[in-house]
Image (cartoon, rainbow, N blue to C red; front, side):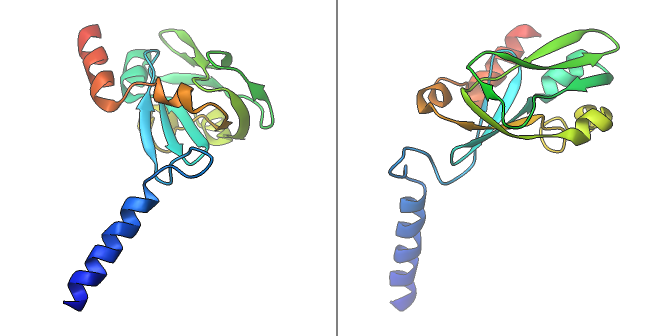
Length: 152
């Protein structure tokens, strides 16, 4: 009986923790995508952004990366960086309006990180975002998968 009450209490707390806070951001990380093949991991009001595995496969061996400066203010769909490969050069767009809070200098120094781990160690930058509606408009995993299947 005590375990059942404790379990209900635990699950009730977890449920409450996944609800929006008073400022409208979630407590847990959520992964979203863009049609231009960026991934976005949302954790509270910070978004970590990089290129998807699909994009790095299409690019081939990455030889140059440019990331935005920390502290820069960025607007939705603004060009904030470049990824260059042996095949082509691609602009990186910010999918969210806000301020750059971190830039992954490791990918600048070691461009192979993007090919080896595009959706983990190969992240490009972080944004403290301001507009939850921009987040809500991003693709979820199922929609992104459909998009990439259509491209193939």
